Amino acid sequence: MVAENGGTVGVPAPVFADTYRVVDGDERKRLTRLLTDDVYTLILPMPADDLLYVAELGLRLPLPLAHAVTQTRRHGASLATFEPDAVRTDLDDYDVLSLN
Image (cartoon, rainbow, N blue to C red):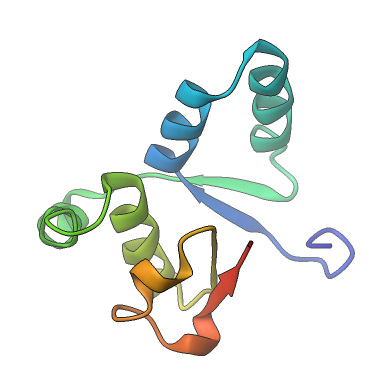
């Protein structure tokens, strides 16, 4: 869908690492192929100037989700997540896309 619209998917590095940890070997290969496609996918690092904000959000959100919220705000993007209710207090409703 993103490719059809000429867009880019940004994946926060901790989200990639956390997902990689919980999937099996075949899924890891597929995940790695998908997320190393430099045409449509961009791995988002955690810049030093975001650390405090991520840490504050991390007091009530898992670290990968806290970083995703931070990057969503930084880039004026939308966040696709399986946990939409967890981030609604930090993002506008129209910026939250439920994957459920």
